[in-house]
Amino acid sequence: MYAIVDVETTGGYAAANGIIEISIQVFDGETIIDQYATLINPDQHIPRYIQALTGITNDMVKEAPRFSEVAQKIHALLEEKTFVAHNVNFDYSFVKNHLEFHGFSLNCKKLCTVRLSRQIFPGLPSYSLGNLCQSLEIEINNKHRASGDAAATVLLFQKLLQNDTKNIIITSLHRNSKEQVLPPHVPRQCFEQLPTTPGVYYFHDQKGKVIYVGKAKNIKSRVNSHFSNNSDSRQRQNFLRNTYTITFKPCATELMACILESTEIKRLWPAFNKSQKTQEDVYGIYHYEDQNGYLRLAIDKKRRHSKPVYSFHYKIDGHNRLKKWIKEYQLCPRLCFIQTSDDPCEGIKEGHCHGACEKKETAQAYNERVLLAINSLSEEETYIVLDKGLQDNEQSCIMVEKGSFFGMGYISKETETKQAAAIKEFLQPMKDNAAIRQLIKRFTERNAQKVIFYSGY
Image 1 (spheres, rainbow, N blue to C red):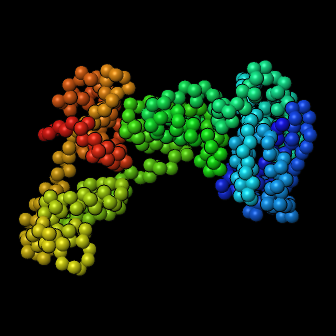
Image 2 (tube, rainbow, N blue to C red):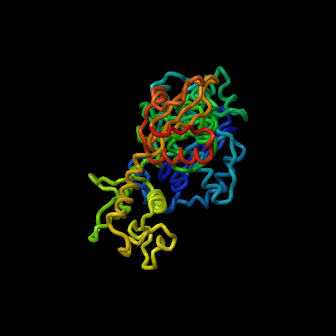
Image 3 (tube, rainbow, N blue to C red):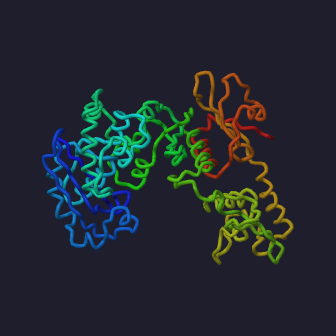
């Protein structure tokens, strides 16, 4: 038994939006044996564009029942039925979310008439409900209203049942079938070709544009996880609605996948990626001479045309850099603004400040050490990280040159690694950013045995 459902809502995802109309057509495969439709008061404002699309206004739902009043009826109609809808995961997420909020569990098998139509009627110009019905000569009355769209979906589903010569519908209902959870527009082959290796995956929209980039230790498993639940989140609904193709780039290691993801997000700027889409180096360490002639080091926000001696994304990175310089070059924490209280200088107490803050050391002597600290930036280490490759006869290689990420690639296990310049020829140069530097730093701290340093480079 099938329950063919359509809902009209106040927005695109169930976690923060309400149902304003629902229609359920109980269908036995030949005839409609029961049906139910009602407007619903969502207890929230209906956006103007939704009113324009559906014709449902705030005044129309003012006296309509709230979902709590009809939840039991809806649950009874759906219980032990196969839930059928056009883009089923959208409608199902709303109905399931609302029922569970009011104490009813819903765990139906699902069928998506978009995915089924793509398989049973391949090659049509569009699989939106309106265009699909036009191609199949199905009349839609009262378009973009729950009853009208549900009635059209019944007629569409009848045609699918009649033309399903390969038993696609029955196969889709099997426990091991992923047809119930896959996004409506993505061919199954896209999922079948995904590897189980580390790498980066890309979600593309209808025009082929990348809308999301993700990294994974296991690409197939990670991609499936985006769609294999009934989450009512905005991100999942965006993926379901807008993803038409999935591509990927395998990587030998999880670290390479993380680096490639960061690079690709900044290169492609995908619509549905939020992390790593901020200005890369937000802060800088600046130096200036105070009125007593002492060089001061201070952290401040980067501004256009400013030239800090060192830039970074997180303030903590700048503080750590200054603390390191204070100890290594015997600088004053007060003159570096690490100590801002009026208490006695911690540097004098710990023995690495010679009293510049109290003018016990000359500005010339102190400033020489400040300049040595700044110049040390040009002496940052050059090293490579070697790990397993994609093939047995190769190894992956990531290079950091003078403290900045240079690039990565694959080299033969026979390649001589004594000269950094020779290694660079085998690697793909990539744009450096703070996120990548942090990734590599954390990895090398845990895996020192995989690092080769080049002295005097």
